[in-house]
Amino acid sequence: MTTESTIYRVGNAHITRITDRLLTTLPGSTVFPDWSEAAVAPWRDAMHPEMLADDDQTLIMSVHSWLIRIDGLIVLVDTGIGNGKSRPFNRVFDRLNTGYLQRLANAGVRPQDVDLVLLTHLHVDHVGWNTRLVDGRWQPTFPNARYVYAQAEEDFYATPAAASRRMIFDDSVQPLIEAGLVQRMGDRGGEIEAGFRFHPTPGHSVGHMSIGLTSGGESALFGGDVMHHPLQLHHPHWNSVFCADGEQARQSRAWALDAIRDGSLYFSSHFPGTSVVRADAHVEGGWAFV
Image (tube, rainbow, N blue to C red; front, top):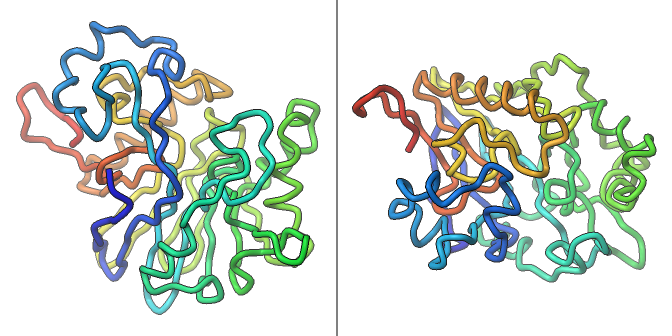
């Protein structure tokens, strides 16, 4: 998988992926408790080489943002892992040095150009580029943007369950609050300008939201971590080990897959390859997602 991305059009919106990094060492059986060779075998050929490693056991996944230009606004959905951040709980995220900002620049966007940052949830690989280190302090990377996320996600970081991950909030969210750049959404979600709407899809995390976009009679859904890998298109009952509430996660996944059966594009947060999914009603046996 390359870091370059197709430009997709949804109504008046032009959308492209800004890659932070690829993850190429995740064992499938570790990520998905329901993993079995028999379940993977029918899809093995379709998964190679961008989605499944040659050993047939290792997942390939992506961490990225979606850059959206619409009606004069520049919008980012999620912000990846970030650089130089201490993440002792997982070396995959620890003190990285990626070319994310250069790839954003290659797409013609400077940090000060971003108007909105829409966050599906506040996990380590979705908020990292909210801030960057300047003169020894974590400061907002996108100083002119409004950062929007669910209130429940912020509330979670005040609980004992979040203690081991508190540094994520401290270096990637708290500086935004101090700068007065945050807008919080209630549990029911709601509309944001330019045709964006937050939809509650809890389960992966307590306040997880998927973000819908409607423009010019067309629509899209940015699903966050409702799904982690394309194998879940074929096995939608599979939860990852990262899901906090398994039953809620399955319900949210079912809702998301149903929501795109009208022809909407699904923009995933971790799928490799194009990272984009559409429904196909013309396959034998009913619906499929490609």
